[in-house]
Picture 1: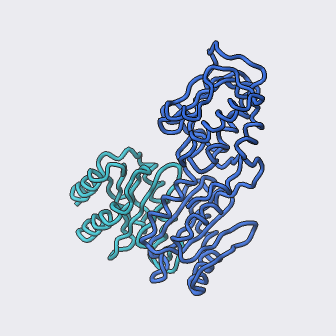
Picture 2: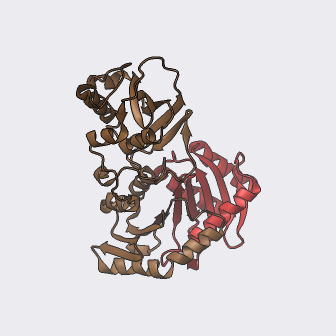
Picture 3: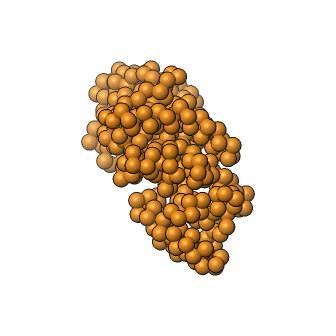
Length: 123
Length: 262
């Protein structure tokens, strides 16, 4: 299963090179489960990324901002762009994406959503 | 869409942060904040000892010998700016009105687009023009009609620039949330986010190991269900919250990056 997920993440990253890290994570445990194979992030940075996603999205039953679980979240700053996508069926399954500012969000978001859906449903 | 006229001289929006370099040159304006001409004037204003300053905007550039907060001479200029006919390699003086105005016109041409401004500062080894007159930066500011002390309001600029892309907005300034929306019910939903969730959200974000000082934009898709998505941003102690339609995400994001990043 891990190999399949890794392949999915690698394939998505190959289509969007501006996206340097893709990680499949579980917000209930706060754990990164699988990343793309060439992520430049070390374990500590990945853990911090997962903590950031938890803070921004909240868990499905307790959204951080708003009254329903957001489908996805974009976080933007001088240090780049991060996109956190929530699986529709298992909303605590998330895809975490770390990108440069050059990422085409409009093109990338639906592909990330579809990728996560395949991963989450197969898992 | 972004009204540069409201942006004043000496905007320190990015000044307190770590300098950013591109191709060996320091970025002094992202094209919006500080306004390009203010950024150039500030750079001259901060130059006491004799230096060669080269200002670059895209492929265009102007190189000056600067000392004592004055432009002493123009030593190089890109071909696209020569139509202003500024004197190259000659001593400058604000008392020589034709040359003075030509330098001002060339600087105006240099910053005609909202593109990032870069500066290279090197020791001056030019043997050409030497003068203790030069063009003082305050005279240059007067010529270019730059207002020196208008307030810095990047968040307000952002909110105004996004006006066509949100359905409700709350702007935190001077200790109050000020809001407007066409639909009062949507605004009420956003006020609930501001009153009940915003501080908790910021606290949780800080505890996740992230900075609460660096400017940030958050965009949560469909966080208000049928009412729309929620965006929140902070910078320099000011906040804004929007409700927006998902189709407007890219526009809001692009405007934010234009104003708050280099």
